[in-house]
Image (cartoon, rainbow, N blue to C red; front, side, top):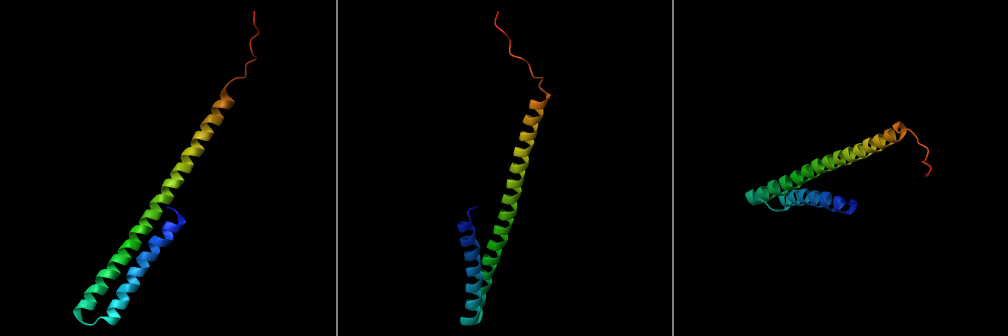
Length: 91
């Protein structure tokens, strides 16, 4: 996930929470309460999902890095185990 997309995603989730708080303060009655609950729930839910996405992506990067390291070690070990041979002379 690109840094710009990450900032926009978390920012929009925070904006939903702020909008919900403003609705609770400005709009009176059950309408304001319902809007506040809906917007704050959506904002916090989106933030939670984004956090899980970040954790999953970091685990994927770690696994890819580990796999690359493992492949590098195996090729290095194969190079060390092969006996060196002198080139054959023709004839």
